[in-house]
Amino acid sequence: MLKQIKGLHHVTSLASSAPDNNAFFTNTLGLRRVKKTVNFDAPDVYHLYYGDEVGTPGSVMTYFPFPNAARGKRGVGEVGVTYFSIPRGSASAWAERLATFDVNGITQDIRFGQSRVLFDGPDGERFALVELDDDRAPWTGGGVSTDMGIRGFQGADMRIADGGATSELLQFMGYEVFDTQDNVTRFIVPDGNAANVIDIETLPNAPAAASSAGSVHHIAFAVENRARQLEVREALLDTGYQVTPVIDRDYFHAIYFRTPAGVLFEIATNEPGFDRDEDTAHLGEALKLPSRHAHLRETLEATLVPLP
Ligand code: ZN
Image (cartoon, rainbow, N blue to C red; front, side):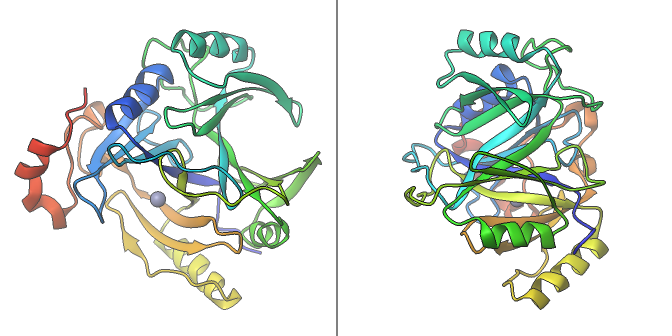
């Protein structure tokens, strides 16, 4: 069993409108946009990153907004709900705030003894805000008060027709079974970061997901550095997974592999981080381009929809 993986690093999803996506995460949820760049493989599309002050691994929600993309179909073989951490006692205030922003699908429940508010993002993706003891500093954009502010991820749930192989994989990656409630089994990384929860929701008769706007594209797990990443890569290869070479994503290094249930996993390094090319005080303001796309700046600045 691996010890190098510490919980989530980031979650990356697909969207249909950069302005709507940007407004939802920076105003409605009050997160900080920590990077405004473009998709490495489709540079005419933004890659937007939202998180805490510096984009700490375990806080970073990222999006590829493909303009006017059709909405994906939710089902098994994907991440279903992404969980953020909020202060104890703030769930009802969040439910009220989300309602004032005309957010869809607002419900409240208790899962594994934790009070939650669930709601839809702008493309129908599902989120939960979970009341937790958590000493991470919140980011309080959009007029969110400190006693409500989001502190990063708690984790995510995966919807799977047969959770057996994914359960084995998570335990190989260092997760331990915490508890089971109804058809959901919770896994936690001991000694992980604060985003150390993965739930597997077993839905044997649900249709397969179809990926498009509102779908999670991949879920990334954090390792400290490139040496730890290479250890994980070797171990996954030895176990029979098809793992990509290490790819430089400018703000972290990444490897990718697909799980038996079809979910795309990434292992990402905590270094170098989002302040490698701009000051912490101004993160996310300027359009940053990967060096291979630097020559496209004039075209991209003329064609990408401006964001506040
Ligand atoms: Zn990623």
